[in-house]
Image (tube, rainbow, N blue to C red; front, side, top):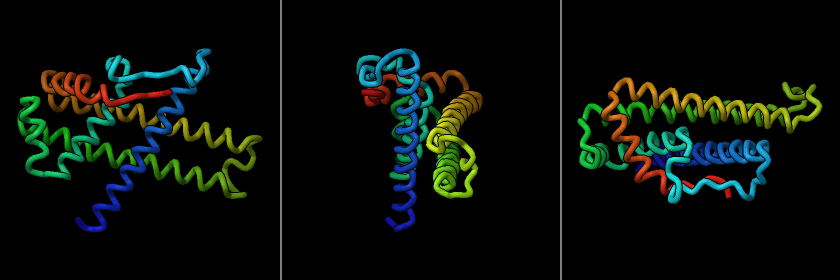
Length: 186
């Protein structure tokens, strides 16, 4: 493996962790606004796979498609084709959408990092805000909500490209095989 691939993979892992951390913060925030305490809010995919939000599930699907493709470009797609009985063209669409998804995550991460850096600057956009921390938190929440919306748009675009039958196979597979490995809250 060359250094560029390792660095790229680390960046995507960090992006994913930022995405997941922000997602959890948003979900916990929603729980607080609904009168629940954050320590009692938990979605365990093993017990309730249908309660895992679609944007989190499709984040995992897109990232898994890319990872399988990077690990074994010839065999990665084959694993999914064999498990889901999908044509090769469908898997190519999923992988292509996965790479587009990672670009979107990268762009969102750069935007978030720019706002974080800007918030530390005395001449920042947040300078006139009475509470810089709240202003930054609000902006990061907006970026997170935008990522969630774009994830669902990419999911819907993929559905249009591959058709309902293939889409439902992937979604069913994800609910049965991926969702049980996800736990949100705590």
